[in-house]
Length: 418
Image 1 (cartoon, rainbow, N blue to C red):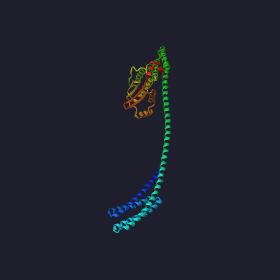
Image 2 (cartoon, rainbow, N blue to C red; image 1 turned 90 degrees about the vertical axis):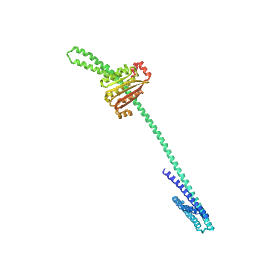
Image 3 (spheres, rainbow, N blue to C red; image 1 turned 45 degrees about the horizontal axis):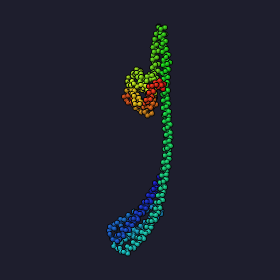
Image 4 (cartoon, one colour; image 1 turned 30 degrees about the vertical axis):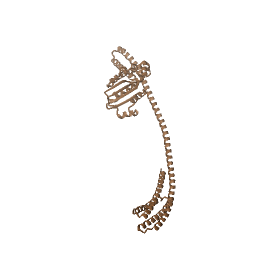
């Protein structure tokens, strides 16, 4: 760029020299013409115009010498031009002075004119030489400027091509990274879904084990204790043992049902929700209002299990964190789907925690993240909003008519599919 700037300055300098030469010649020609007119007419205005024009010629010559100072040849030419110019001005001034003094005659003026013509001829030849030299220099400088300009264009085009190649490579790498990230996220969601499914299966197995094994053993123990009581009525500890066994049976049944309520498989979501909410309200002392259609009917097993687990986790969070005295649960039919809303009237979730959860599902533990993954697995929508008056969790899941018909017509298969 510096070379191009320098070349452009030299081209501009060449144009300035040409302009200066032409300007100086123009002033000399005008001064000669005004001198002739004044000598011929003696008009005072012509004399004033001549003097004004002749007065500017030294400045024009000085400018030309300044512009050609870098070129020895032109500097010599300019010195010769200056000598001829001084001679030419002296002759013109002599003619003007003679006319002004009244001593002018035809022969004297004719002699001066012939001398002026000779000097002007030499000046024209010198001017042509100077202009020719400047023209050649200008052509060389213009070619040099064009060369540097094309070189810069080539460099810029090469840089642009390199940038485009790097951009394309970077774009491919970003696409690969994005594809790898999406694959990792898909694998993570699959793993998360599989873990939740295994967790549900484990809960169901533990629930059955508690009911079929420990529950049956406790029931058998309860049947034997009255027999022992009849054989040893004087022992006061037997009545207390019977109370402990009754309490253990109730606790075992409660834990078994909380792990996986049999009502969910046998009677469907509506009954299981009402049973769970009633038990939760008794245990937590939180007033929970339930709004659920009586004719909700059976739904696909995956939908029922997902909504029930979300209800469980939401009510547990209300009891642990919200400090709410009351809550609301509603289930509603939608065209092509189902909605579940759980609202509490507690202190709410801090705004910065809610923002982190919405951004990357962090900062709230695994409960809310697990809910969102369950809903995402079904192709539904999970939303949470919170302020100082409480928190609202809204879930919408799609339910296809074919799946719903299968859940109604083949309840055993629907349960097994869970």
